[in-house]
Amino acid sequence: MDGDQNTRRTEYLSFLLRLWRVSVAGAPVWRVSLQRPGSAEGISLADLEAVVAFLRAEMEEGVKPEPSESEGPT
Image 1: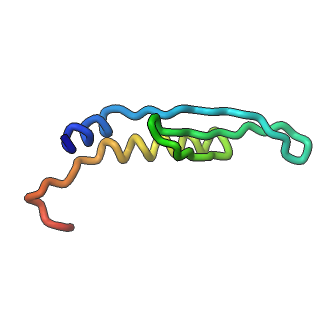
Image 2: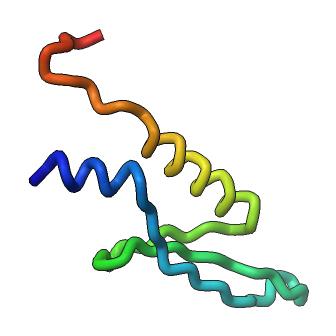
């Protein structure tokens, strides 16, 4: 079963995206949070660039091959 979960993780990512506007020094600013489905843990991000950077990192992590049991530590 663990192998199936790892496969799903590398081939499919989903997040609930929340956007809201706040006032910072009188100017409207957008804030963002991401949450994995089934998780109460949210990830707060300050701007769109941070969202894109986070998602890129998640996607890159997802495509790294899992080390096999026969390989030793590097």
